[in-house]
Image (cartoon, rainbow, N blue to C red; front, side, top):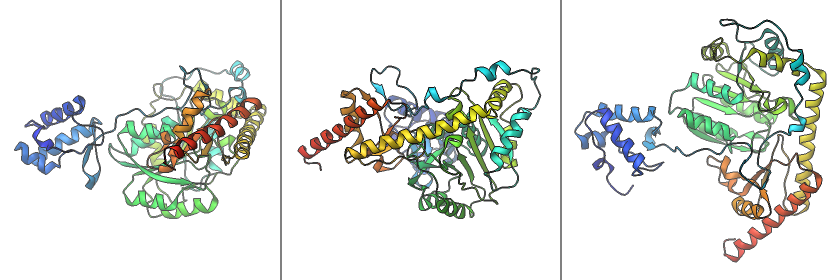
Length: 450
């Protein structure tokens, strides 16, 4: 800022000082990212004890108005909304930015619903349905190195990650996030008042140097996607997973959360960064990608201490996951017809994405399909320019910068959800995209920018 902010902040008590800063933020005198005066300078300016200024800043931090960056000082928090997944309901354009599974590939639960029965579950009873617990334990156990694990059932993966961070962190703690990153993870960290530390992602997943740097910056938690990373589609290679486990050996008490959201649909093996001796960890698997987003259930396997803290946030009868939903999920995942349908859906997503990437490559826009529901398409021109051209041709796409924390290359990426397009529509989109790239490139050349 180009003026002395200490002259504008008033108050003698911590509450009054905090109210003064809040008023400056609300009036627009302070913008997101603006620095606040150092505590010592503010205390001297107001003639108050340093601890009073510290208490004022602490109140503002607790309210989410400001963030503290250690030696980087205290800054106004960014309170802008994070882009969300899903349909654009008010758009007349063909939406290929949804990130949704194909509804035609989601198993019909009607038969399972008709067969559900059993006595009612009452207050004070176990929060996990015994049948689901037995099945889920076997599902998680086969992929985890630590010998002692406990299960928790949550209302989806986002709920699990939010609860895991809340039981381990306090506001302004640092969390390592993949960059580019899943939109819900960015939203969860921002709403929780934590500080995101970006870790670059390449074709083999989270980078070793990036994780090492984040740990050296003091992150208290790491959120990793072992396969089908959203938006890139990257999956951990065995060598990369081993290298990341080696880095984490020196930080056994950093909470490591693995979000294996694509689990049953994935075409790549599961590779974990959680070593056998890591002390604080959780593997989260949701059913939303293969049983449907409205099936809000996830299994979290974690170390016993983390599981115990999670349990305190799932009070029997109030915040637990409905046992009817748990029984429905168990009925579906143990039905051979359903599991065969899920396997076929995974093959369908992989084949459709690969076919569309081949279409683009043949038209001069090189692309490759990763794992997952989406394609992460590199462009020779800014993605926003291409998206504007595609809008004029009737398509709604998503530019890569929405997923970026610090990754400059994301501005030349598109994330597309194309697996449900008929062949003719896929041909038309690929052709329109290639034409949009040429038009955007021509405009840059004419402007002397390329």
